Image 1: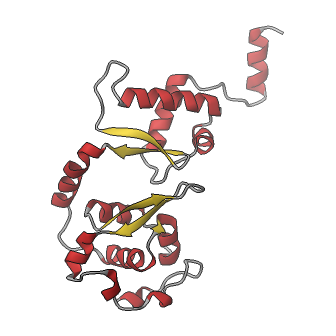
Image 2: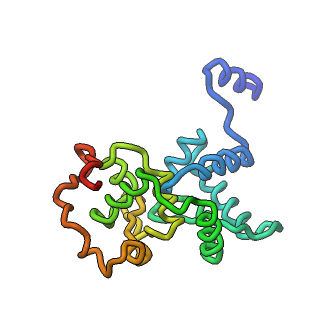
Image 3: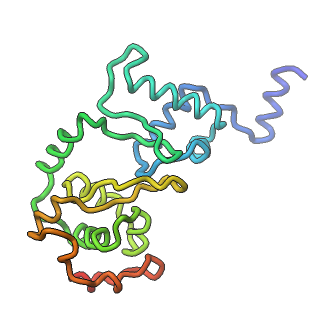
Length: 205
């Protein structure tokens, strides 16, 4: 069988040709720009429709590119492996810069959604984004990003099995609330479920 015959057979079978390495890298960048949790190589391979070895090679290329090892400038962000998954992060030296910018753009008062999300994290910490979303029964990705940028919550640790980032409140929250510790908060934790049955926001008002 000739190469042309093999290609024809693939087309007739409905099989898409394998993506070029550059295309894999571009697809990965698009996915990595929108994910909020570290993604495994298998998950990324599924998302970009490419073999795991090709994704691994593309990841290594992106890491080198962002680190300035391929002749270009070192980027202000990095592609880092955390808890068995990959995600884009602002480089540590730029954390203060980004926080200052976000705070300058953000309104001085938090939205009701942000307040409710913050309350759940305060009472259930350390807690993952998906657990908070389950408790509130809504997507909380953008709200969590806002709270992190405002310095009210921070990453506590990354679950070694799931790769999920768990969050906790910061001392800045205590300062804003005018309290010395979380022990001074009203004791309503038993009223918050584990996320299985939704969340009644009236409890926190």
